[in-house]
Image (cartoon, rainbow, N blue to C red; front, side, top):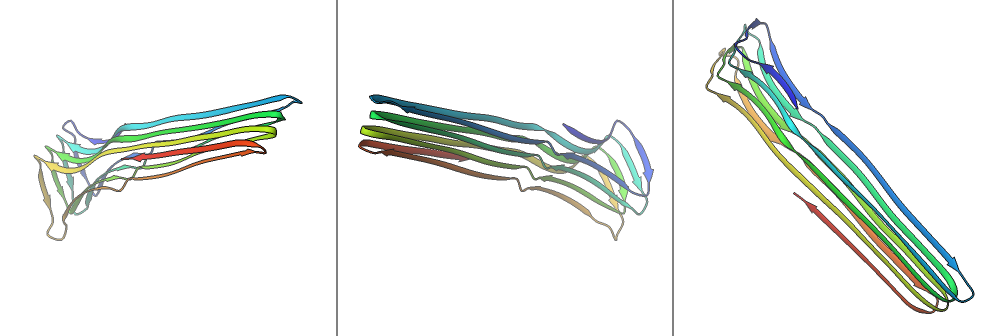
Length: 238
C-alpha cells in the first residue's frame, strides 16, 4: 500500500503543494518445463513423456493521495493531489514434451500442459476530505494504469517408428487473467477556494490493460499404424 498524506489537523502555508502516491509493484514470472523420452528395442518399444508448468501471480493493494482534516494555504500557487497505480505482471510459461520410440512394435505418447493465472486488483484514490484549501489552482487526479502481459505455450511431439506404430500427442494451454480496479477522485465536505485565473480539476481515469497470448501445438507421427494429436487452448480475461 502507498499513501501520500496531509492529515490530522495539519496547517500548511507555502508557495505550492504536491501530494503524490504511486503504486508500482512488479511481478516478472518465467516458468519452463520440458520432458524428453526416447526408447528403442528389437521387439516392443514404449516411450512416454509429460510436462506441466503452472504459475499464479497476484498484485493487490491501495494507493491513496489525500488532504484530510487539514488546512492548506498556497498563495497564488498550485495544489495537486495525485494517485497513480502502474503495477505490472509479466508472465511467460512454456511446457514441452517429446516422445520417440522405435521398435518392431512401437508406442509413443507425449503430453504438455500449461496454466497461467494472473490477477491485479486494488484501489487508487485521490481525495480532499473535510479540509480547507486556498490556492491559485487545484487538481485532484487518480489514474489506474496496471498491465498484465501473459504468454502461455504448450507443445508436444510424439513419434513412433516400426512395423507397427501407435503415436499420440496432446497439449493444453490456459491463461486466466483478472483486472479489478476501483479508481476515484473526489472533493468531499471541504472548503476550496481558487483565484479567478486558476481552476479546479477533478479527474479519475482507468486505462489498465490485459494482453494474453496462448499457443497449443501437438504433432503425432507414426511410420506404420495410427497417430493422433489434440490441442486445447483457453483464454479468459476480465
